[in-house]
Length: 235
Image 1 (cartoon, one colour):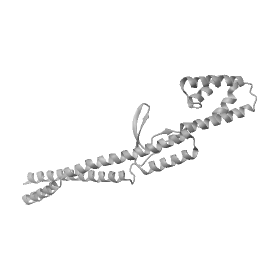
Image 2: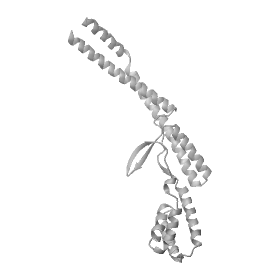
Image 3: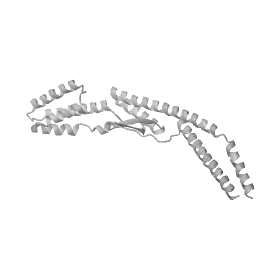
Image 4: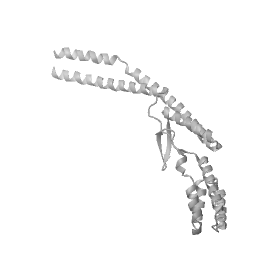
């Protein structure tokens, strides 16, 4: 009886062995290559769309900015894309566009807000026009020295810090800090799904199926080997 059972197990083992696992491994390797290629193409497209947003930000046309952002969001939300971001000196991989900043748009809004502040202050008599002129000259010279663009954060911080040295300038400081927009409003970061119904997603599913087959086959093969040894021990 033990011999018959052992023979059946051997036949099953031969059936499993006839399936050429190396072919599946080869298909898996090729699939990984295709998947990496498709993923890279999607990433290239995402970076092109992100660069288009930055270019629109530089140009300053609000309609173009909104349109380019909409195109970027649509692509990122419907594709699996990867970006490398750096935080605290360390790089990490994220699924999505990665963070980027509408710097020029912020600068334009900040400059417009400061212009409104100047106009508002012009209607009041604080008796400190000379102080403001001195601060403006000092910070503008620093901007030239360090290559700051007008109304970027270092430039604005210089204004606020220098004005804060004069208590009588507090009304100007309060007005400026209240009118300058928050930088977080111009910080963009869009996350992508781990899987999306694209060609890359189809290949990704195919790879997962092959891996499952290989794992099941490996487990089955060693399980049959173990069963054969156990039946030999009983006979």
